[in-house]
Amino acid sequence: MMKAESIGFIVEIFNIKLATAVALQRLLTTIVRDKIYELSPKNNGVLRREGDDLFWNQKKLSISSCSTPELLNTTKT
Image (tube, rainbow, N blue to C red; front, side, top):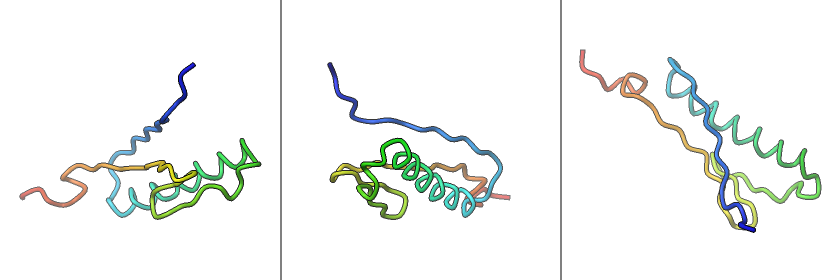
């Protein structure tokens, strides 16, 4: 049997400012950590959060975001 090496979550939110997207990304990180603790209480305290990343036994769980030029205000007018 193969062992899972990764899991992905995709969240799409449109028409928001970059600062809002960053805040939501950090909130998602906390929600994921809390859900893991809820589903597996024996692992409570095992996850370490650094910014937008979670670490579990030295394995990194990454949470990334992307944006469009409109959100970065880099479009020419």
